[in-house]
Image (cartoon, helix red, strand yellow):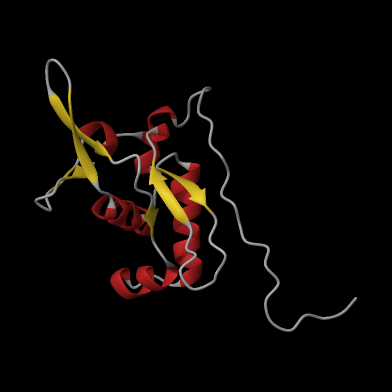
Length: 139
């Protein structure tokens, strides 16, 4: 799956028929497509051909607020979709946001989904915030 500067999105058979993709639920698929729409692609030329790849210098931020506004997804459902996408090898979390204004979690697309279900499939688990916010009971 990918897009180009013209706003066109393309979808590869290999992805569509993969075990990883077919195990995603409807929300996971919506979020994955949105990640691809948010990704900036660059054209890479080789001797025989040219192809579009995700820009390695650009990480994707996709906030809970944006997921709710654009896709109508609640925080818990979006959180589960992010975890599923990471566990199936579609995205990698590159930065855990701090919950402060402008400090969002960052992600990048991954092709580990191609190895999903095989012995050499290996992912980095999703980092979760352990911030203690609000009133806490003293121990």
